[in-house]
Every structure is written in structure tokens, then in C-alpha cells.
Image 1 (cartoon, one colour):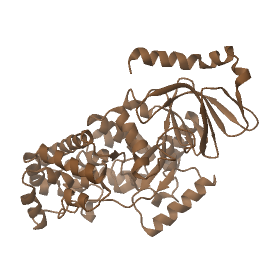
Image 2: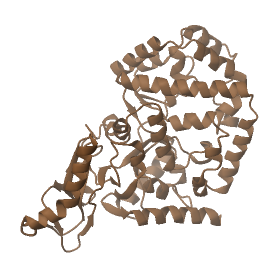
Image 3: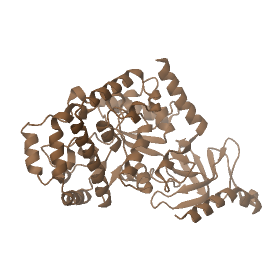
Length: 442
């Protein structure tokens, strides 16, 4: 969209209330007696990024009841909010999270997630106990007893076993991979020496990439010992093999939840931007202590090993973009889980993921789709999620600026609508402040 067209949209949105009044809008307005009305919104079509200015939305009973250019007038118990010049998109979905274990925590993760625009998340820890807790949370949320995003269970993580190639796993019906397969993952499939490297992994000459004693940051454990192995993958990378693998994924409908921010924090474990992040105020003190200790341990790794691991991350970003360009379907996810995922703050980590995707070459529209439209397709829930349309769930994010123009605008949140309930910027800031205060009291 050109700057001229954006300017025209902005003017139209600003003039919409005046034009309605001058054109007899008071007479042809539709009375709404219940629920919530968003007036003069710019609705973003997540399918193609097109914009519809001067739209009025009526949400009630957790659903979008009406979207119209005709004025809507709130009467009775209905509430109206003027969102002139603001952009409405579906609520964000974090499709790789570990949060249900914190359902009874004080504070829980929900305020930070909601304040970040997350209205649903895929819970990866799908033990029977967690499923029971997640279902209970969804019931309480639907009944209005608690304010929380929807918990989505759709199978656990799909880490690749080094004994099985990504191609074979996809051919066998794996629905999705997380973290590019984790560890060496599917990048091993892209090496010209794949068979030799896989044989070395199976022979036990390499340390396991995810030892229980260092699960918070496996790279701090295996980096120095296995760096030569990562380097061999780097040195033998064959882009044509990755392109061929992408075609296999497309053929088999094998999805990817990249969690680039999780991959980055693993190989930048001592980065000052994480160690000094003001958002650590939302993390309990014991977890912060663990993370700082991991940073100290990472700082002791040989510089050559760290360089290799960081180059490997750059390759992971490159492969991610290559697969997207070849039509592989993808979703956003952050993999936060408290002390187990170093430097990942609930909610905020998804916006870090947005920025990593942008750095890898993904467009703002692609990133918006990966957080809304694409997860709806993956779950077979296009009838209720993924777009701002009548009949769909009233889970929305109201943004101050066009999210298709700049990925940073996905974080310029003016309000969130969760199950039809309007949460203003002030309400969202209070949720974050209350979380920080509860942490400070611990």
C-alpha cells in the first residue's frame, strides 16, 4: 500500500463519524442494546492484508455479531468504544507454550499474555493432569470466573530423533515440527554428508542435545563438546537439499512452529539485552536467578564454540525463510515455560518471535498470518478463528498503527477484546503493573 493510500484511509477513518452525522447517520443508525460496539475501526483482512476503513463491529456473547459501515448506536446495557484510526485484527495465537502448570500460580501468566494480545495458546505439556487443568481453565474462562486466553491442546511437541530423517518423519505422517526439529533437527537433512553425520549421532560419539541436567539451555551444555559437529553441518550445507525437503513438507502438509526466539536465546545466553531486560520485572526471583546462572555458564564457553552456535542460528533463520518461500506452512510460537525456557517472558516472548521472523526476512503480513489465520487452518477452526468476520470468536486486538506496514505495529496495542470483553490500554497496563507488584512482594 502506498503512503498516499494510507493517508487517504486515515482521513476517511477520521471523517467517518462526521460523514455519518451529516448524512443522516442518526436516522439510519442501528440500535444495539447489549454487548460491545467498536466504532469507526479499520478492519484488517488477514487473508490478503487489505483494509476496510470506517467499519463498526458489534460483539456479544463471545461472538462477532455484525460488521457494517452503517452506524451502530449503543443503547441499554451496550457499551460503545470509538476506535477511529485504529486497526482491528484477530487475537494472536502462541502455538508453542508451556503455561497450564502456572494456572494456580500467583500471579498466573494470563495477564501478561492478554496484555500482549494473546487470546489463545497451544499447550505443549499435554499430560493427563495438564489436560484436566486446561479444560477446567477454559470452563472458568467461558463462565467469566477468570480472565485467561483459551488453552488449546493439539498434540505434544514433535522433536526429531536423530535416527529418523525429517523426510521420513514427514512421510510417516508427522503433522508438525517444533524448533526446526530441535537440536540439529531437520538441518541435518540439508547436509551433503547427512548419512555420515547421522551415523555418527547414532554411534553415540556425540553428546545428546537435550540432557535433563541442562534443559534450560542445552547449548550451554553441549556447545563446547558438539560445536565441531554443528560446524560440519554448516560446512556441508546444501541448499538444494533443503529446497527438496521443503517440497516434501508441502506434499505431506507438514507444518512448522519455528520458535526462533527460543533458538536465539539458547545461543545468545549471555546477551545483555536479555540479562538487562526490564521485562524481567515480570519474572519471579528464583527463575531470574536460574537464568542469570545460565548466562554465567554460557559466558564460560569457548569463543569458537559460541561463534559456531550463533552461525548455526543464522542458518536456521535462512532455512526458515527458504521453506516459507517454498510454501511450507508455519505458525508463530515462543516456547516460554518459566524457568525451563531461559530469557522468555510470557506474552512478551511472542513479540520477540515476531521480530526474529522479520529479521529472517518474513513480511509483516506473513507474520500476522502465522499468528492468526494459519493456526486456525492447522487446527481446522477456520469457522471461528483467524479472521475478523461475522460469526467468529470475539477475540480481537486493536492496534494504533497498520500491522501490514511494519511488524513493530503488532505490538502497538490499544485494546484487546477477549471473549467479547473490551480491555482498554489502561486496563492492560494495570494487569502488567499488578503482575510486577505481585512478583516484587515475593
